[in-house]
Image (tube, rainbow, N blue to C red):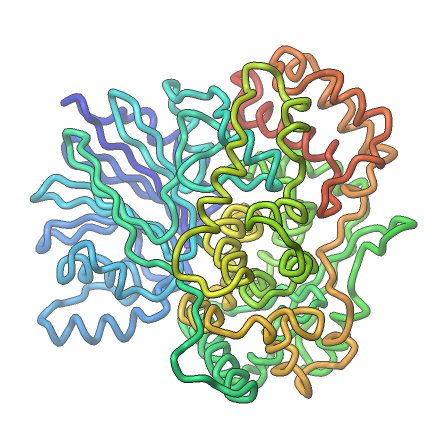
Length: 597
């Protein structure tokens, strides 16, 4: 798990050797254990390493194989690398290291672009073919690991975060109108390839890109998710057993390939609690678990310790609890925002940031429950969408969009007003073939698009800000493929995630299984008042915000007049959404305040 970056010049000139140290400085938090650079003609690679597999120097990067004429920078974890290594050895390949990085080099030498189809794991990598003078980039099937890029007439650059790309002075930092529409409509999700900035793009999940030294570019989608019932029907018990087996395998995969201890982020919800149970079921002893809580508000508790404590007690984990006071949340909020590759409005972003700071002092790798709600139908809005009438888009929009297009036009300045871009995009993706029922359409959209740039990206950014690798078993692509075949009633039944609740019965306390769906609570960012209100008021009233003109002042004044009266359909604060976007731009993009790494 690491931070990667690189530059391929397109004008016949060599790379800018002064730029690479600045890019690496903005990736340093992702990889505190080693820094490396490597150059070949128009190509320059940079790498920051977090040592998890094969801790020796032999697995440092950039990794070069002179015999094969290949060089690689890689971020992620390949869970089947041992099996692939054995297969490649039988084909005559010789290995000089013991980790998963070299396996990618050999896999590319053997299978070319199709190497990604042999990989099980989370990954983003760039591979330079010294003989063909081509750069090959790839991202895992579900977009767990990030890969951003920018292109100018002079150069193509890539990195694990946008901050590294913004180290270059020639990146177009104008606001992308389509990205802005998505940002303010689907809670800061901007589907790939766009971002909030015109000059920065991201490689979509399950996609590879090949680019040559002349700048010719070709993309290939190597995996598509379908959501259809199998030809042979199964009973509920058979489905439950199949999911249980697949989940056991997913958890075990993410445990076995690490040369350092692995912990669990235990929120108190069903998903992370089930991970603890399955790890114990697999024979893991001395498991380390970690929970975080915040100050209560009158409307909402700030922690779920009453649910996480019994799970830790039942499995006798080495449990760590952290209670974060509100003044620390506010004090550390700007720092967390500088670690966001894109503006993220999820209330739990700062929670994961502060929790990861503590957890990273005890372990380097954790398993986390992200993805279970989207894969197995856990959110309250899914059955509501199913029960609605109207077009596919109308059913979705009524329960998910933060604001309709008419309100968007009242929100932003004239320069960014255009078509209902988000509705067009969502309608197009819902209509894609390969889904049997409406819930299948929605869950496939969520799993392949929406969670990639919401909880998955949030967890990656906030954990890697402290050199902590988060592994997400519920997004094992083979488990996801199986789950997409499940009949809808086994997902949204029993208040959501029915099949997981069946698996958990007897493994977890009934109180954890039967509790209402909870969310990682940071009440101060939902019920905006006191110092948090003043902070947001100062942000949106700042000179930078006024001069940017991104938001209409009448709209901001309306939010400020009644900050707790303006919530999205999913109960997010519209003032927080606005202030967060402005703060991210100030800290990461504006020249006077741009983060230095």
